[in-house]
Amino acid sequence: MPWYASMGLMIGLILSLMALRIPVAFAFLLANVIGVFIFMGGHFGLVQLAANASESLMNYALLPIPLFILMGELFFHTGIAERVFFVVDRLMGRVRGRLSYVAIGGGTLFSALSGSSLGNVAMMGSSMYPEMRRIGYSDTLSIGPIIATGGLAAIIPPSGLAVVLGSLASLDVGRLLLAGLVPGVLLALGYAALVWTLTIIRPQTAPDYDVPQTSGREKLRLAVVNLLPMMFIIFMVMGLIVLGIATPTEAAAFGVVAVMIVAAFFRRLSLHAVARAAESAMKISGMIFMIILASTTFSQILAMSGATRGLVGWVNGIDASLPQVLVAMALVLLLFGAFLEPVGIMLLTIPVFLPLAQSYGLDPLWMGVFILIFIELGLATPPFGMALFVMMGATEGKSILAISRAVIPYLLCTLGLVVVISAYPQIVLFLPSLAGR
Image (cartoon, rainbow, N blue to C red):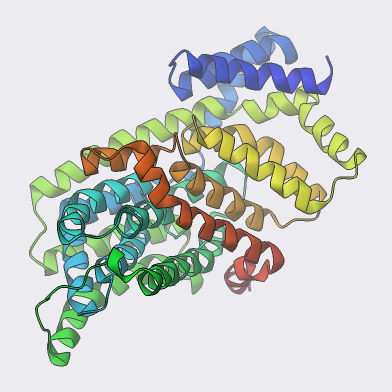
């Protein structure tokens, strides 16, 4: 069977099963069973499939996933997230468009502490949008920053998606987490610059209004009491990885303990909050592990059928330039983002994209960040991005068209970052290179 027929058969099977509303994990399992009979020799292939499935879940690199998820759930259920937004709001003072900056600043910090993109959008949408609407903020300065900043959780560590991607692609998870830090921060600064520009060009989109005056001493007290503990949590995760003191798994465990210490410090730690966080983390982790189990043979089947090797050879044969290949990859990721969840996108693209990228001499860590950025874009890309529908629930009445218009400037800002890191890949690779020394 030609390589393109093999690839078309496998991907077509999975997409067809998903179109029938079969869950991602079971769609991959069923497609893999069919692929095993076609390409791996029937019964022998099924035995190998079962062996690979058990081995895939006994992977030490997967341990950070439930720990990072638990960390984010504790951060939300103990009420620490609400405290962060309140403090950032008070520190901003009377700056025009301050609630947009609060959404960006608080959302970025929450991304670094939760790792959940859709959770970010849901929390900020329900807590911040009603106040922004009441004051008279435009959709671009209220809905846009909430959706855009929510997606940063896919890039800024500790990102659960980065751990999944690193595990599936056999990359160093710790270095991949570090690789997303600088692009994520730059993206947040880009969103802030966009808000500043919009408030200068069209000040009526962010009405001025009276806010409580806060003295310099009070601002300092708020920052020390409320934000320094957040820095402690971030240090316990990323700082220990950068310093080489802890592995990603150990750092994730330290992060859970750090959140519990901070929650106890604020007197918000309770058995009820811990139980709710643990229950939610178990459900999400179980779903992710089921998908990983179902995906174990997909890349092997593509390799056995010659699809991966054939695609790489075909691209090299047509002499496509690197920018053309990256644009093609980006379009595929955005297309899949319209109807697939992030993990499903990774399962379909990693077995093909990484060998292709390496054939062009691209660093696998850089390629991992590239994929994560476009997964983040896919969550917010009109008209089917999942973050848009989450925001629809929070706004209660806004149409998908209005929400889409509000987020488009921020999507363009994200594409600008992709151009920058493509021209200067060291932006992505600098921190991982320090950790590797």
